[in-house]
Every structure is written in structure tokens, then in C-alpha cells.
Image 1 (cartoon, rainbow, N blue to C red):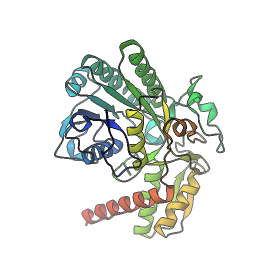
Image 2: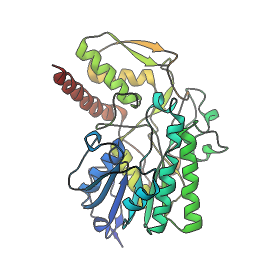
Image 3: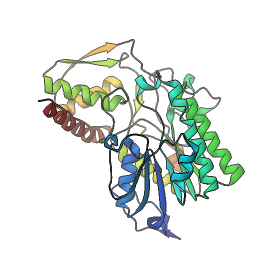
Image 4: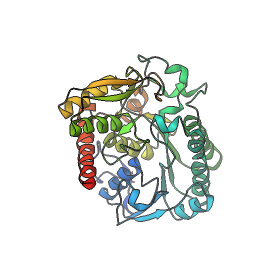
Amino acid sequence: MMNKNIQSVYGPEVQFPENFQEQKILVAGAGGFIGGHLVADLLRRGCRQIVAVDLKPKDEWYQYFSDVDNRIMDLRNEDACFDASRGCDRIYNLACNMGGMGFIENNKAACMRSVLINTHLLEAARINQCDRYFYSSTACVYAADKQSTPDVAPLKEEDAYPAMPEDGYGWEKLFSERLCRHYTEDYGVVTRIARLHNVYGPHGTFDGGREKAPAALCRKIGLCKLKRELSFEIWGDGEQTRSFMYIDDCITGIHLITESDEWCDPINLGSAEMMSINQLAKVIEGIADIDLEHQYNLDAPKGVRGRSSDNTLIQKVFGWQPSVTLEDGLSKTYDWIFQELLKQRANLR
């Protein structure tokens, strides 16, 4: 039986198992951006047996909730995965070593070592008889030759093959997708996979080298406003295109995909609203009420030339797709980052 009465601040109603609030849930990567928002949402939905795991010290978690079982563990180790998942009814695997293009392009081996997390967690899910396993994949699994121009066609799920994913991070994610598939086929582990496209929002990385474009631009533009500077740097020529999904839509999509009994293959979870980095910067400048000059660093990491999500499948399967507009999502994100910049400035005095 399904319970239709569990409400959330996020999107449409999701049908969960009747005993969902009593289930024991592991969130791997809970100290990260998406993981922190997921734990917050599970608490809002009335879940009280949450095991939140991350490698970082607790004072570095983006969101920390004292009323869950918070653990610092390295899930690249098999014993840690078995211990964390013991007795769990479901696992959300959001744990990996990643960041924006500056990090991904310069840390390929570190990104690929995250394959140990999914490998050991899947085996733990099998042995511990976990009911459902969600794996967070990425649009970086898509073939590079389908992302070579700014005006590319939106990426469909089948565009991941023949395989030519982003080196390092993309290969790890594509391999882990296949491992989920074979654990379902060979062992009956119920796995669900979402290919996330550029998630952004408050309570995430906005400096230090791991931040993605929306957060990086919010920080740069916010600093220009605070310091009364007239220009900031954009990586590349600014004509590279992307679609960006606000965190609320991401959480809704994770739940819809995880709870589905109709679809088990990898599926896109991203916005179809594509724009260039130059356009993205202008939207944020409008939110900040400032007009700045763009300086271009053509030698900086910039990733593929164009990428957007084809949402035909998710609309067909769920009758839904991410819908928060970029301007609405960026307004909340910029406001949060600007307040964080003000706090940093106050602490330096």
C-alpha cells in the first residue's frame, strides 16, 4: 500500500510505501550539497531513522541536523559501507569526489576512486537486504561528440552510448551505472539511477575550487558589489551552454525516480532551460542590480561546448519535469551566497 499523505515543500506529491516514515534510511554524502538538502527533506517528511554519512569533519557539512545519526566514515572502505548500511531499508548514494570543471579536469584519478563507494555500497545493500538503492549519476556520462557546439541538441538517455564520457569523473559514473544494472539483474537489488544536470542552490559550495558555474558567478558578482569592482573573470569565452536545475526540483526528481515501480533504467534529471554562461552571468547581474564588464580566461577549464537535458522520457514516465525558472532559483542562490560573503567579511574585521 502507498501513503499519499506525506507532504514536502518540494514539488508534486510523491507516493511512498506506507511504512516510509518508520524505515531506516542511509544518506551517503549527507554532508554535501544535495545530500544535506535530501536529509532536510526526509526530516520534513517525518523520517526519524536517518543515518547521515560523510567523509568531511562535521563542522564542514553544508547542513547538519543533530536529530539524525551523523557519522564520519570513508565509504571507499568496504567495512564502512557494511556498517553504515546495516539494518537500512533504503540507501541514497550521493557520495563521490567531485566539483566544478576546475576540480574535475585536474583530479581524474581522485574522481574515479569514487567507484569504490558504489561498489562496496551495492554489495552491502545486497548482503544487508536493502529494499531500494538510489544512485546519483551525472550528465558527464554523455558522449563528448554530442556536446561539441553551443547549440547542441538536448541529450537523450541513449546518447550515453557508444561510450565516450568525460574523462575520469564521467567514466566512473557510467561504470557505476552499469554496476547498478547488473546488481539488479544478477542479485535482484532494486536500483534507481538519475543523471543529474548541473544542480545549484543555497547551502552549497561557492568558493575553494569545487564550485560550479552558478555559485561561482554569484560569488564573483557579489564580491564585485561589495568591493565596488567593475569587472570579473569568466572561464572560456562565455558562449558555452548549459542547463541548470534548482535544488528543489532535484529533490523532487530523486523521490519520484526512487519510488518508481515502472522505470529502473538511468533517466535524465535536469532542466531543459539552456543558456550560455554569458547569459547566466547577465541574469545574476540583474538580480544583483549591477552591470559589469566580463574578462575572459580562455586557458581556464571550461568543459564541453554545450549540454542540455532532453526531458522527453521523464515527462512520459512521471508526467513531470524540473520547473523552477533559472531567475527564481538564482535569486535565492545569490541572496544566500551574498549573505555568506557578508559573514566572511565581518569575520575578517
